[in-house]
Length: 113
Length: 114
Image (cartoon, one colour):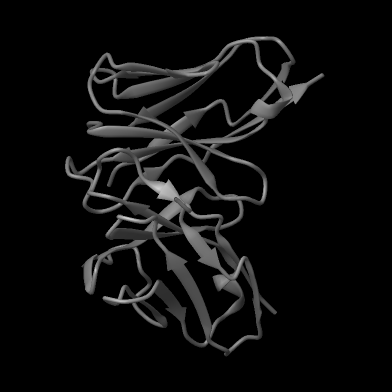
């Protein structure tokens, strides 16, 4: 079965600094999803990457997919308190999205003012 | 266009009772997924349903758990004879087609078994 490893597990960053979160898969990635979860709340969809080398941005968040390395990275520029939360990567390992996503354990991000 | 709606948000059950968790997918979405998030663990896939059909239930415990997605109405995750280990956050997600355009999650139902 596919496993996703996220690093780091937790991250404390000073407001205004940049940061990167990584997600590495044990198997081929057919689709990679990034979600943000506020503590005690649901998951907010950030973006989905499907093709090797694909890069997407939303506001100050950029995600890339390295298909060969079976890895994705999420980069936040000039972090803000609103970026705090748990970031989860989810992978579609079947190629058709038919059997749900496998998730990493999440990266807890804290932004220090 | 309302997002994925789950209710209740919080549910407390005594051991041995039944828990029913409801999920209304986003408008236009016919694919529903249920996930469980245990403390200190990531989200684990439980079951994937498409209207009136269970497509994949490989993540569902073999006993006491069942799911349905009737032609009319919300998807239901049912846990019979709950035990303390069932305490978790249960998330429902929906998509228009499998793997396309993103999968959107509800706010979750936090089940506490006392």
